[in-house]
Length: 338
Image 1 (cartoon, rainbow, N blue to C red):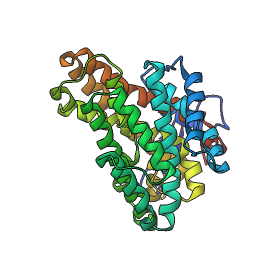
Image 2: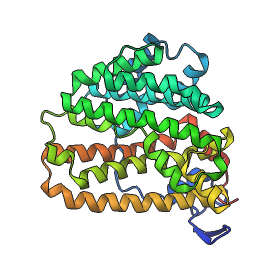
Image 3: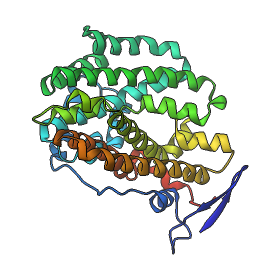
Image 4: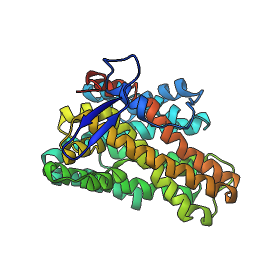
């Protein structure tokens, strides 16, 4: 055990036995509580081929930098880990949506960092497509329109409407992120988690998992306070876990919407200490998720239980993907103990 000092308190850090030169990834693996088993979709290779073709069809990988980014983020792998039980058709939609969001998110960060107002045309186009069914005016808009079409074909009207509404939340969150980037030094941890909950882009996938099943959730299940709370908790855990592994990359890039970096700014501590604070928050949230899940499952339908299992997929899948994806390889460059 090692103790790291911050301005406010001493933090006890578990370092892997026999690994005096362990890095930040080892630190995360040792301290993160992950109760759910590793799973992988058997249709991953097929989904990878489909998503590469889909990106080329809509011109999203015409820019060499974007093509490199996609190769380093492996969207089909993330889809496979988070969605291990869906059929090949649904997995392909999930992989396409993940790839689309990576392209959209990176462009939004580039534009928003210089000026939030530059983001407005891009965000307004997306909202018009999702909310009003308006025709696209850009390549990204055309890809989103096609994605929306696939969701409507796969899901019921109610499920597709929830997908569109939750996707709009993600779009709106990117404007909050751009505003926060203009004055990063005043961004508090609570503000970061609020923005991160919007920009996570996780909850739009849950109606897809419901649409993959023969039966539909009842309104009582969809709107049950515990089910909605589980949805929020699972999305938070998924993106906070990714924040652990992406912190080094995002620190180098000057990005601020990252929970570990927010803790580092607020506590004025080392990155390993900030990572440990984030892990404590994640572990507590997972424990709350498990407790609420155990209480609600006896009254859920089989479809409702499957819906919650889809949330578990994102909790575990984001961990397995983020710890090895090339996009976050810098995590191994930082020692566990500074």
